[in-house]
Image 1 (cartoon, rainbow, N blue to C red):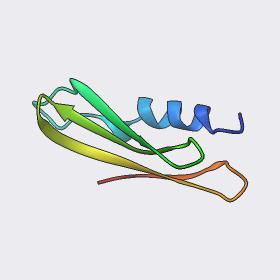
Image 2 (tube, rainbow, N blue to C red; image 1 turned 90 degrees about the vertical axis):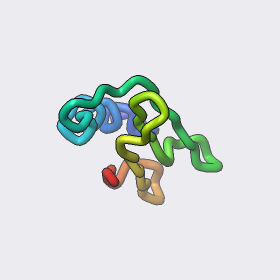
Image 3 (cartoon, rainbow, N blue to C red; image 1 turned 135 degrees about the horizontal axis):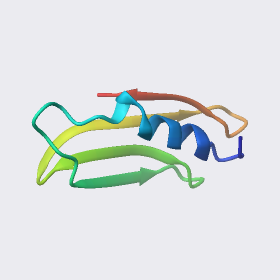
Length: 70
């Protein structure tokens, strides 16, 4: 795994964790970043409607710890 955790992010994006609710389609994604350049949140939208947010937490060594969906 790379230092920035890209493979883990890729796996999370392809999993059910990122599926749109029934009848919805993801048309836009918005990202926020930590001060050191790691993904902090990913927000998925159908048009202007927020469908879900993924929140990424990182270990002290810079590896990805967890991805949570809200």
